[in-house]
View 1 (cartoon, rainbow, N blue to C red):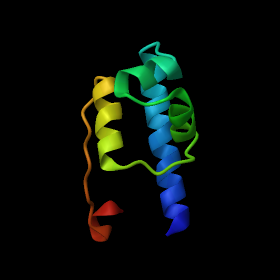
View 2: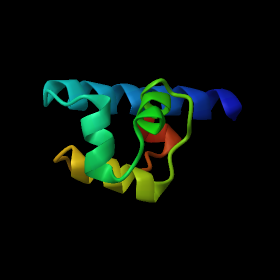
View 3: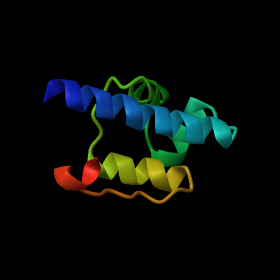
View 4: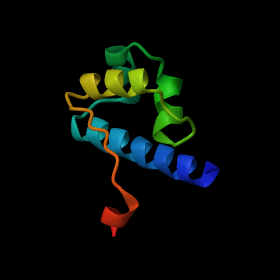
Length: 78
């Protein structure tokens, strides 16, 4: 399960980094927008932390994005 969590953390970090850079924001600017510190954003974008739902909500809001979470049954994922 650790490998899945690590892969998910990396993917979420990449999505946030891509959105942040697409908006022309620095890590410090994003951190200020969502009430975090720049090193926290850096760790998150590198996949070094598994985010909580409140953290994901704050990041989505700061990035002007909607947060969408879904469950896909295994038999429908293929």
